[in-house]
Image 1 (cartoon, rainbow, N blue to C red):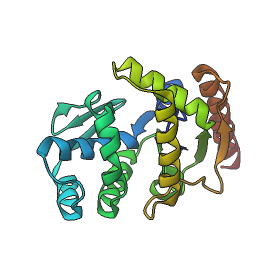
Image 2 (image 1 turned 30 degrees about the vertical axis):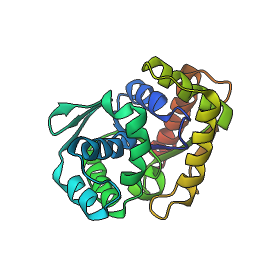
Image 3 (image 1 turned 60 degrees about the vertical axis):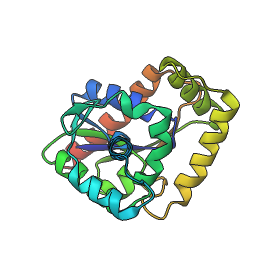
Image 4 (image 1 turned 135 degrees about the horizontal axis):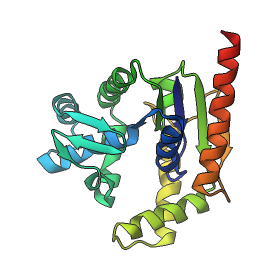
Length: 222
């Protein structure tokens, strides 16, 4: 069974998707980390990320390995490195690139073959896995998401301002919705859950209930 979790930046997708996968005994795929890894590879190689062909060639050349929450790039563990503000700002180049997205969706589908999987990102239920058995659209208010992002940055030792984080998230929301390739939108058959006021454990509990209910219906239908 494929469970997709899509939603805007800061909605808590990565945290709850990892925990949900563990709760269900499923594999876990953080697709946003894959786009970050491509951007990080470009920064590390010193290429001009705004040059489409250079970025496309890089995405085809690098080896991205996913092991739960860990991400390796050409054999190097870059799990922490790809979460920096510099990489966050650069990821739009890989996320907006049609050839890069096509390549990474190809890798995502290949990785999912034969697995029970929780996969999260921006277009998992609409593009990567349109036939997924369970689709979730996870969201939260802008203020709530900004506070979570600020806490993440501070935990990484970065200095950040709440007003700036709020502005960054609002700008990213607008950009994600307007993208020509893989825009953020809720799949018609997705279950939407707003997580304002909910702890991560409460969100995971609710999502597990949704998944198990759908799985139970599928089992009864078969």
